[in-house]
Image (cartoon, rainbow, N blue to C red; front, top):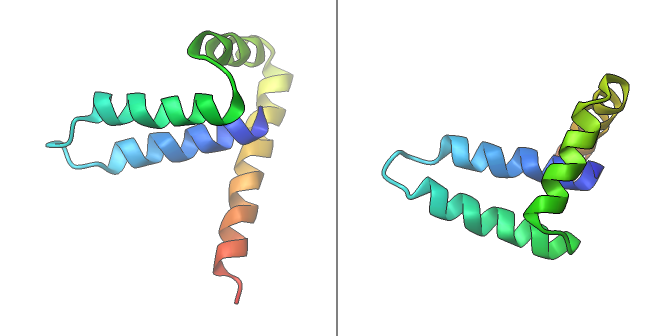
Length: 81
């Protein structure tokens, strides 16, 4: 779930920074579809999993921290020579 959440962060970031004239719902559907295909899940499984973690604050805290750390590690790997 850590990988999925870290990729969700990236998707939401892309959508946030898109100019307003882009069709954000269409792009969101495409990006999330690619995410679901990559991890062989569907939107219902995704939502159930998020709800599971969100209802337990300790689990959600550790999941969000792990996802953030994963993104930091990826960023560091890109920036290192």
